[in-house]
Amino acid sequence: MNHTRAHLRIEPQGERPLNVHSGYWLKSNYNTLDIGPGESPMLIVAVTNLEDGARLFVPDDEREDSDHYEPPNGVGFDADEAKVHVKLVGGWDAQYVFEFDFVVKKLPTPSIEHIG
Image (cartoon, rainbow, N blue to C red; front, side, top):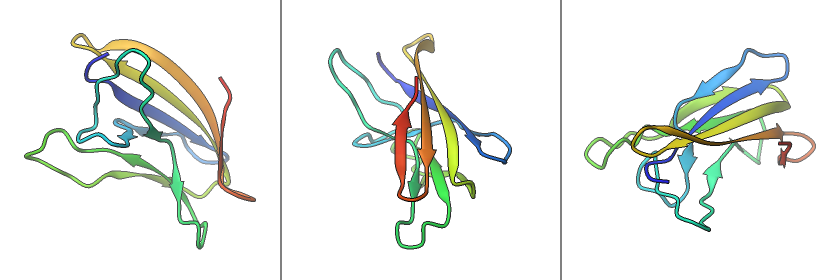
């Protein structure tokens, strides 16, 4: 699947839902990447500062091309837990690929659990 983008919807406990247009792919120069058969690229679902553990943060990758690099923005939330829905979209016709659901927990230690 060429030019695959990850859209994320974050639903923190007790807070309003948040949307991330382009998830942050590791080892990719842009906010999209090509996924071949049998490949399993890594997507950052959430990060936190392990020293203070204050907020969870989901990066929104603004790297459209090499001439216009923008550092990732993103959304942060204070809840200790959030549901994260990931939708992969790619191909020349922006074809729907697959959806995943996770629960991200900040306490007692940061963790991500695949739930569907």
